[in-house]
Length: 504
Image 1 (cartoon, rainbow, N blue to C red):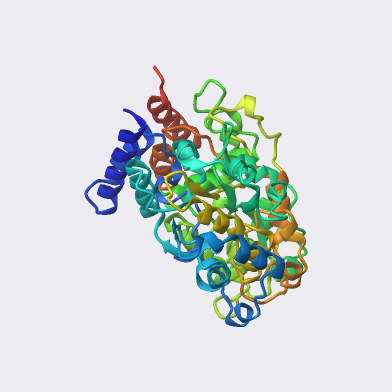
Image 2: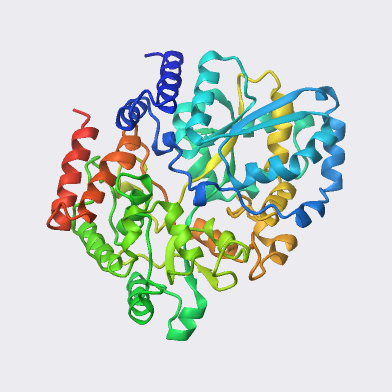
């Protein structure tokens, strides 16, 4: 199948799935064969409480004062493009929501360029993207690229490094490509030698805990996996049933369950695949991880096996859990006094150190990078089919510039910035206040986790089916009691995974 036919077919099956004319497993398998990763269902990006929206404070929005020099440059350089319209279809993410609801008018006023942003469920973003590239119509000028789509769409976008170098008149002064966190450039924006887009957002696992409970029980921030478990046990024994030791996102058959599993697997020196492409979750390290998880589970609320990330986040907001290892995007929500019972009580830290050395990429398969800080993320890319590429490139630079990222962050987006310098900005630091929705006081932990603890899942066509169906379905059966031991469950997963991945 040639690339155009492949993308037309992908658009077709996505349309059928969205309209309920194709079941989930068939869609996963078909999409996987076309090279799409876990993000095909919008599940590789974390969406707490149904949306990754953040907290756009009217007071904060009213105080926006964009960098005068940048806006003057935009006003001058955009004159040839005034009246053009730039279109983007995107998932509901903190950057997209902050730009769409509060920041976009500043760009439009300065440039005369109209910006239309469609905020959609991720599978519909994929549907529109695939149809657009297959037809070559250029309906959308900018693409929101989930990390798991990089390989499939790397030939349909313009490498931002090349675009920046090709026309110096359109190169934003002080844009500084080198300011993007190197781990994110490699992890969510690079496919082989192509930079698919510029890093746009980055959800990632960090440790978050109730400081009031830690202080009461004399607990310290866990730096090892054993300490994390010991804290969970101590909280559970002292506070249950009002407050449980920890929680999870462990709904059977859901990608969230696979995310939890990988964090515990990697934290015990395990990996999903070995260098021969065979499943290794049932080796010694994998079984040690399962034993650890079983011990953690004994300190969780009963409903945890029905929760995705939404239920996990809500359980913390309701004040019934003492600590968690989960998505840092939760933290600003929990500090919001209007929506959370734990406002001002939470603290953030990097994940505990792995119990055994992390496997290196030459010890894993399909580009898997073990790390306790499980990550998901996206890039913003200019479509090579766009009829307004220059206007789109101006918007992409503005949307990912230092100044715009500062405002995205201080408006309460929740996700960590993708630029190194934004973490140290005075406005961002000033927003690190306890007890306000959209606080930034968790971002030091996010930055350090990105740099030193980040884990990335493997990249292979079958990963959509494996991560959204095969693995979490069998893990769900284990937690439901269908297997008599972790080994039986892991051996069963190994058999199923290897049969699907078998290259013959």
